[in-house]
Length: 124
Image (cartoon, rainbow, N blue to C red):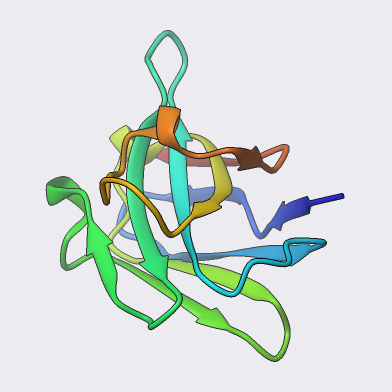
């Protein structure tokens, strides 16, 4: 059974930083994409960043330069370092994983396993 557990969310002021973590277990494939996604109230879920088995990263345009995705394979943990946070970054942040097949995409519909999310609130 695949389990993804996010942590690290919270409330910060504009310009602040947070580091999210996602502890994973039960995913046995040696090749994968793992990603971070977010959903603001009243909006669709959107891709933030993803990393693959080789450590190659990809970011949504609005996050480039501010967010950094990384992974610690020894700890089975995915991270998202978020700097220069803005109020529009507010939302629920989720991690997800999918097989390393098909089109490389940040479309959340292509990801199979999801965590329960962690809330990020950025005040102005």
